[in-house]
Length: 468
Image (tube, rainbow, N blue to C red):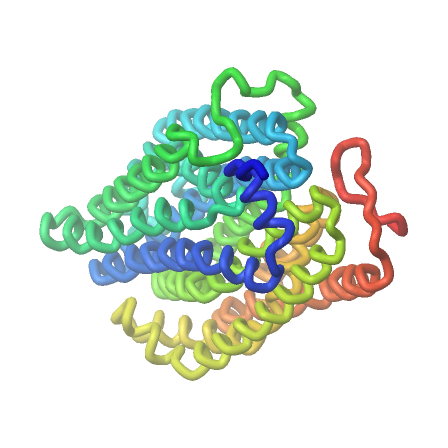
């Protein structure tokens, strides 16, 4: 019997090996890469916070800008990745190549435009993002380097998703992980040893992103992946571009609304307690994301398994992947919720020496710890419907936490609960409302998976249950 090709071996692995171990094997490297990313973001906050609360507030402000860049990169990466995974499951390499090439070169072009416009209008942008007058000089310095790296950052997100959706998450872990580790070592070197301050932190972030980009791109150039990358495969079909963007729309909404909600929160928090509240909530965001990385990593290990088996029309494996990941993720978040509640008072002083910021951050972390087990429901629904091309459901669900519920809460809760307490309760309130809205989607999906064994594809390649 002829030996299987590399593509055939990967297809067999993704569609025939036991589902639960497969999800965990793919989740491990994605979780590691997510954690390293979270750690080096936290490292930035830690080292910059030691310079002062205005510098810490500046990094929190620029984080909103980075979230916008990340939102566009993830939109292209997730949109093309979902198409790539389902296409490879259906053994359609041509479509996978078009998806990769179109998203990658689009990312570079859009990133270049962001760089040019951002550098021209940097001061009004920083003010719009919620910078206080004392934080503005530092925010401008930090943002210049981040803006220069926009094309690289966006290209990195596309390549990261390529490796993940092809089921080769180890390449993603190496690229993102080594870049992140480098950032952790460069932060103290540039900030303290070279005495570059906030500029040093930004330089470290930019250099680490460049290293990650190279590490992710080189294996593609060496043809270690299945999907082909070539400028000749860049699609001229507007509908194909639309398909990538619409499939990735939940990521754009999720990240974009996160940026907008952070801007709103910064404006309100800055009015209530100036730099102390900005610093506290900025640190809260970094600590929370570090924990949230575990759930995202597990979910990202699940997505290519779902995509491949959906493309291969193996519905029993789709059901097993969903149920296992859902309950495993809920257990993980419950465990970390308990730890966060216990150790929140010890975490905040690690990042800042300001009594008011520590008090605000500790309360916010403890309130969020109480609702952490609820987070899995919305994340699983988002990832599932996006993976299967059910764009409207995924887009709606991704808009809940950081948009539909969070933004009104920013302006309502401080008035109801008397200022700072309202800021501290923003995330848990939004998470409870998001869970109550997402739970019916998850339960209906589970019930119907138990009853139905057949799916249909619509003319656009999206999933379609017979009973939808």
